[in-house]
Length: 100
Figure (cartoon, rainbow, N blue to C red):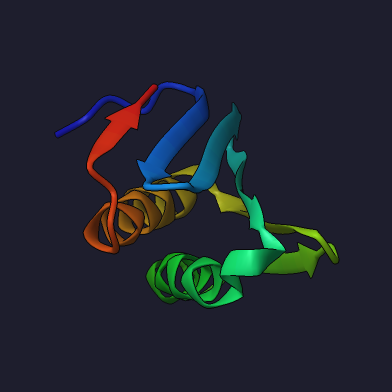
């Protein structure tokens, strides 16, 4: 099992599409931010839906026009699982390497 440490600037490179996934731990509550270019709306939606499905009680806010940003906030353990699911889906759809 992975430890629950903060990871930020975690970028998953999928060709010329970069999905940026940030997990910020604030004690009991945490936030997960998924950022992507609007040209890849479909892939951003796939990654965000996987995260939301993993954290059903999280509060979700999606904003942006050219740069899409989805923020999930909730309990740390649930948001951590959502981050792992988001990273897994982002790597599945063309991600050949993941940097932390």
